[in-house]
Amino acid sequence: MPELPGISQKDAVRVLQKLGYVILRQGKHINMSNGVVLVQIPRHNPINAFTMGHIAATAGLTPDEFRKML
Image (cartoon, rainbow, N blue to C red; front, side, top):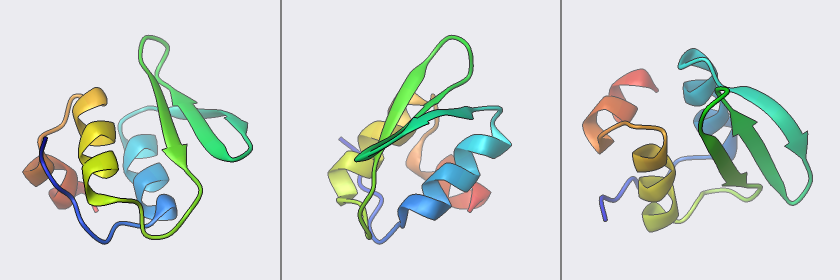
């Protein structure tokens, strides 16, 4: 699993919004969807590197693509 260390939940939400994801629900996690894929982002800073890698992969991005969108 690719690693993306040191990314905050606000940065992750901002990148996914650039990709067309919208916030569906917020609680202990932020649930976002683009109409096809559902992504859950934990509400703590920073997000674990392996968790962030999984979020990026679920959204269809490589770690390098995700870093460029920050």
